[in-house]
Length: 347
Image 1 (cartoon, helix red, strand yellow):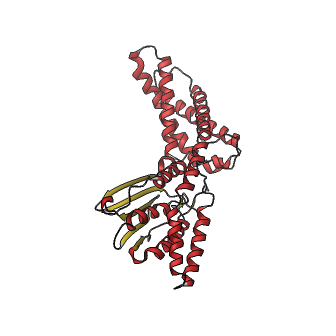
Image 2 (cartoon, rainbow, N blue to C red; image 1 turned 45 degrees about the horizontal axis):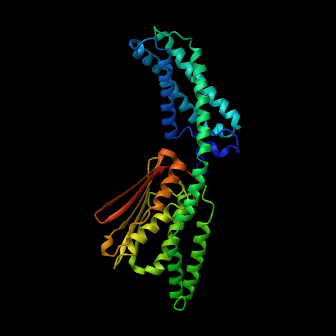
Image 3 (cartoon, rainbow, N blue to C red; image 1 turned 60 degrees about the horizontal axis):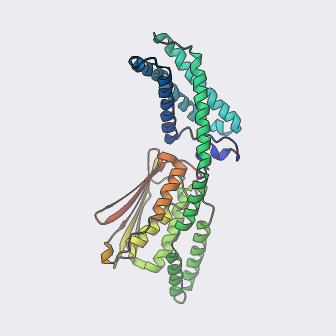
């Protein structure tokens, strides 16, 4: 499983070795394309003899650089599982070799079509290898620079996991049913202990969505002990992929927000809807709860720590491939999450 802040191959390399990016990640592609185009522009400005020849120079280099870069990224994405089984240095050598071969192949292919080509086709391989080395060094430095951010995100996860009021309210609810239903009180204490055991685990590894659902159900069972019929939950998980890998402790804080801000302030019953589904290679998570104005007895707006923490961890795990959005409409507050469908062992 991928670790937080260690997308792609980074988790396979020991500390201190080069850290390669995830070559199948959209964010990696975007950064590589922007960097390669920036380096190409600098090269053109250095060698151009006059502004009148600038458009021709740009078109000539772009015809080689763009397809070669895209082809190289596609090849690296295809062989990424094999790169993960190599040593870090050997994997880096293979990456540089693939980039050089892609550059030379497209330069050789397009040389006969260009009347202004002044450089041998093998020069493209040299410059592609040099650019790749620069990019690999940059990705490695960026991964190391993120280490403090990862530690901070883990600290945020510890503080955002659960509100202290939930513990006190749960214990009070257990005390309330202890004499009337001692078996239910004992079960509630077991659920509370299991919940906190999971909450205090190391949260660096992705977990199956089925485990997150089980944790959320335990949490809701404890809240029902206190709120009774006021808490109504509608699960929509018929098309949910249970083996999808998601950041740990993602559902429970969102559902706790929905209960705390949506159900507790209500005088009567309220419904929380939890919809989990798959659309092609994307996993969709939609959680909605009723909202009343603060002046009508609602809780004040929170510090959004849970949302900020989840957004940060989505970025660390999935880069630009995951999104989190919120909206308020028709008296319902909704949180929507989209993330790539990564398969794991269903539990």
